[in-house]
Length: 396
Image 1 (cartoon, one colour):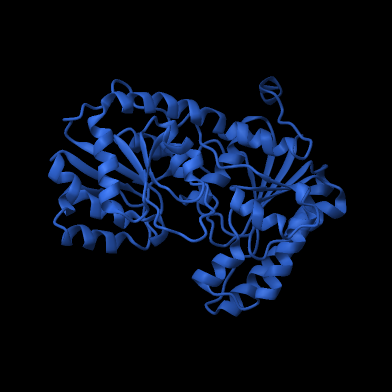
Image 2 (cartoon, helix red, strand yellow):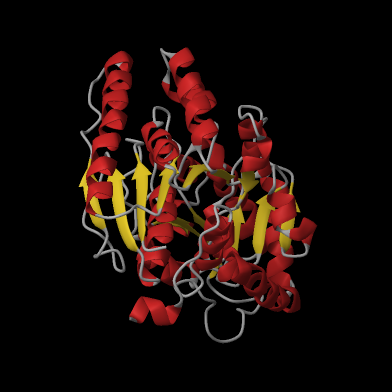
């Protein structure tokens, strides 16, 4: 397999940006480029210059999605998706296309339909039940149209890969043949994210840093971490919190930290380049995923895979698939969601248990190894009968 087209019509994803979705997309493309695939990217929002390893990816820009009103943006997004067909026609006229890989977007269906008509293998990557998200968080006028788009895209794909079993269940309910739907969880770049050198920090270490990586949004529960910090400082004055990322909750979290009198113990980096995540993880002693109680937790959090690859003890809320990911406590601590006291107890237990943190470093790295993005991509392509070129082929 030599020529692949990655389609992303989601206007909320700057493909060369810093969001988690951007990192996911870049990681897949980076594996392909490193293995000698001629990779093409068709997208509505480029988001900057190609990062390292993606300089050779050919970018084909779709019309931008515009409009202040919801109805105008929906129509604009539909028009952008229609333009995918002509780009694929042009690429196929140059040389055969071996695979169309599309990230499911609310109005994206042309890539999968084009591949089905041409007999080209196709993969539809589904990261969330977007219709439900759009209705709940942003507003959706033409829900019937969005439902039809989802059904067409899912039905046309050779393989549908979903990041969690919850998302797979949503997809299987919409396709004629549920055997086309597979769960393929997110991955991590284990060459970029590695453990810190040396021994884990002693219990009395100062600072002892509790970290979080991700977009600062309400459903990430970072307020629970901030509220746990005063409890932690009563037990050990060396505690610090490192928040890596930006988002709509940044100001509210800063105000909350100030109100609790712990602003001086919180460092917020703001938005950072994905290439810098590895070095920031090395500053942490424990990492958290403090999600609140959510009725429909369907995520496959990139952050947790990164924490494990970095050899960090993880404290996570016992929601969704997090218990399974952390092997029901073998790879970290699970706590009641939305409970600052429970979070503080688990973190402090880990601080005091140096031997356990040492074991968790080793077991976390071992758990992350099979989740390297190269394995994720190889598994995905295998579902449609394709393989990546070997290393020797990529060099040739």
